Amino acid sequence: MKTVRRVQITAYIIGWLPPLILACFSTMPNAEARDVYYGKAKETVLIPFGVETLFRFPIEVKTITEANRFEIRPANPEEPDYSVLVVKPRMSEGSADVTFLFSDGSVARTQLIISNKPNLKRDSIYDFKPKDDLLVSNPNLAEPSSNAKHDPMTISELDLMRAMIRGESVSGFDVSHYSLNIPIGSPNLTAQLTKVYRGKDLNGYVYLLKVDGSGHFYEVDLKALALGHPNLAVVSQIDRKVIGGNQPDDRESFLRIIAKPGTSASKVILPVAIKSDAKAEGK
Image (tube, rainbow, N blue to C red; front, side):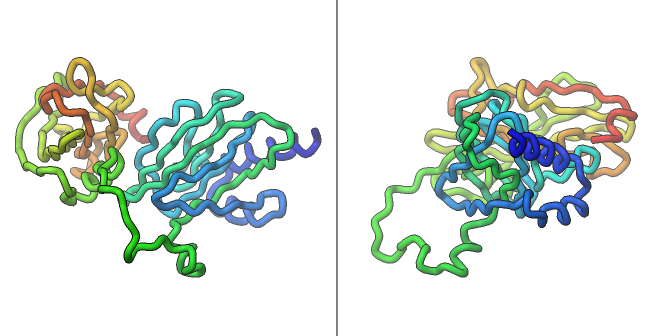
């Protein structure tokens, strides 16, 4: 019991340490990190219940999907760094396929398994690294590619989202450019449809949100977002959680939605909250 109690306290302190102290602290024996190499395959990570676990990524995380079983937040809330996240289970057991979409469009797919077994090795820190880094030093681990047979390529929601963030074309999707104003019913906030990806099983929509003037701030609630009735939206992503500010770039943000076919891009339901200047300063 003494060991478990010590780990709980250590994990809690890590979540609030500034980056410089955190880098020093991670070299201590009781804060040893475990490497997780991610690629196309799903990586399994055991998460102990009742403690906080630190995930460190090589690049900032933009979007996290299917993470309802976990509380996931930046380790340092005062200076949020979305490449260093704290993960804490909301329940004592279960699992979820959680995907982390990075700012460069790359993806880390994981299966997070919650366990409250007392004999579970409680790794407090996981360092996520691209599998390419592992293949550089271990070339024999590379997947065969010359004469190997592959299944026909299928585009997943996250593959499409990655292409939408990068502004790339995708095999099997027709891309159309637009400049269509979409009514969203919010004063001083406009939405314009700029691009549509049309595929057999999925469609992708790119909207440009703009705030008129420097004294207005809006926060978009992606959890309550909908496209059509019934809602056919599958995945959504926005570049800025809070839109507004003194700089022109702060008053614009791209919103991307992937949906099942059968609805119109103009039927987007975009819940937004008007924020005061004081609250928006901490965005």
